[in-house]
Image (cartoon, rainbow, N blue to C red; front, side, top):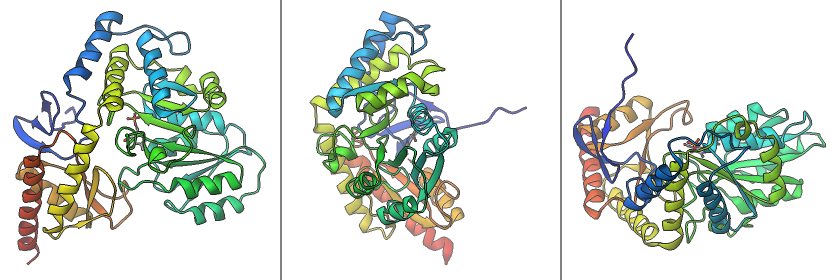
Length: 376
Ligand SMILES: Cc1ncc(COP(=O)(O)O)c(C=O)c1O
């Protein structure tokens, strides 16, 4: 039997990467702040590894290390919330939160139609019902909730930044509907924390929403730590998930080395806004340059810039052309995105230089030329 094959990366990730022996400009990485290969983050992992060993052999509900404690405490101070619970991924955080908080048949989860797959899975784990509202549409949310009789607990859950759109959820409006029907709002900040908001505190900061809004997130994207997730919010709710969340209790914690990397990254994100500033410059430079190339960009905010191609085959073809030109991008088609809206999702990073951005724009310009020859 053949094992599955994938492009094989060599060396630390930065704005470019060695893939199968070829240096490629990387436009498909979640390493938004360029921290995955940062010496201080790598050193944070090393220190924790040396101190605690490869595994701590403990279930997270029994005990964790001091580095886990520091990470939870400093993240809670950074986000301005009462309490933080660490998970080995954001998928686990979403699962535990939804399963715990919607655990009776009369409870109700209201979920954005574009929410991440791990939220969809969390809804399936819950004993309550799930109703889906139209993407980022508070009126649809209102209509859906009014149509469901029930007296149990209500939750509204949304991505803070939608991974395929790059857009920021309308938290103020969603919050207002949620408050009106007595629902708890939950925001998945996986693509937002470290990246969105004046100081990188996420979509909650961007919208100046209540800092104690219940949020989940990952350490695998802007933090560059590889994996790990969190639930942050009011102590009472976090305690409930700590006591009953199955994907918290019945699985292994993030390793100490990963917590060490995440802690080092958190301190950089908190103390040095220059990466966030450089990322914003890269996004502006890329968008300005792409305007000349004729490609159709979705009007997103931040480092996720979807290049809309419509049909699946075309998206795949353009991504392949770009790879031939030394630029690594990924295309997405149905069912990951709605039918007829296949796209290349460009993800920019603070690790990119001006030259990298110009190279990317030039490659898209060349790909447009090649594509027009293909069609004529
Ligand atoms: C919105 C959102 N939530 C959760 C996740 C999953 O994060 P993790 O890899 O930590 O499980 C992702 C990852 O792509 C995501 O985009």
